[in-house]
Image (tube, rainbow, N blue to C red; front, side, top):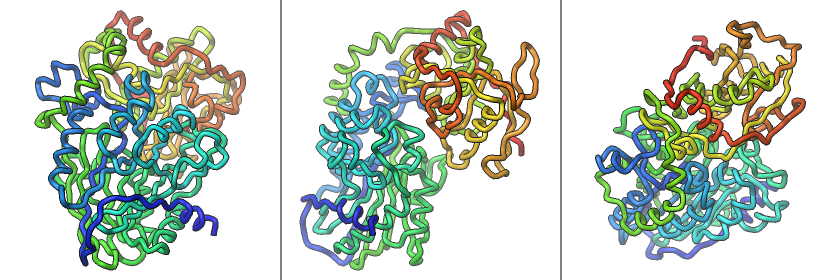
Length: 534
């Protein structure tokens, strides 16, 4: 009953388009997800794109191009029915956010005309206070359903779980859902309580249905696999527009994780379209959904649009961005070293196996404090947000890789706790969880075919030039980041360890200093410190 009441109380009716109802109703949904404040164009490897490379037509996305393609596509549907949606995570990811926080996001998104925006876990990175500022400055509704903010003085009464928008004379119900592990991977604070996604969406969809709304969209930030679980479990959700896993769905693009849309059969035997549009504003999702008069989806067709150099950026947006970039360009462009080859920091590798960026960051962390008796470094793969191309490395790129303003942190753990931490790190590889451990001073193997909690084996600790089996009874001082040290990404053993210290230098500065220490030239590598048993 409580879930039903929560769903019902979340209903808000917004005035929108009006017109006569038809037996068949088609809605064109444009959508992005996991934008992460990537206001500038990005390279093919998702790193920062310099002006020369962009001029050569080798870059993608950027807020100016995104504005152009949104305007052009919506104009194509002028006189028709369309919605522009974001599935969350619009904050952390560039110096624009680091410098201007949520204001830069709301300023541009207001001008782009978003209809509804979901809450991502990263909207809580700077606590409820910054999220409140985003909500108050946004000229569009921000929804998030499966978390209770009534005890938080910043957010209480300021966010709805679902909303009803009228488009073309039809009522469209849109439900928000955010990943349940947000308290582990962000900073919502003690007063924001997250609940089960499926239970919440079930109650919210039943409330919408009871209110006479028979066209229901779930705008989610829970990840592709969880989206499919929700679609298979609930009979009243018609469409899922998702985010969080940064998944590329496409019928044409090489490397896509699945078709666009991915169709999932619900308990009533009806196929539910699930869509997602990759990341960083590189694609604009574009799906046309047709319902019959009973609110049953009869057709779902579309394909995400790759925003490449063929799209001319909006001049007004480009000018606004240039003005904002002025104060931060000096810091962005400071060269901190050179890499002899690309440094792979992609989520596909760093959240699943040993990766080059993970080795670089973990090595840098351990090098910084090894004279303090620290022997092990553990960095969550989800804290690594970009690759770096071959050539010069700028401070801006370092901050793009490590955008969360995390600091170096240390804590004392038993060998048994180190193993337990590694088990946590490899416990959710299947869903691309950010907890995957990138390490230094440590070697281990893992077997994904085994159940979580029993996947790790052959843990070795560096001892001079040699390696020795970890002693479960011994005490080891480890270095990590302050987010993980406080228990983020499920590293509860770090929060329970002895002699914690969270106030070391910023990780991006640790990285810059380490590269300088190498003589300014770095060669990326992997060396088998993490072995997957197959």
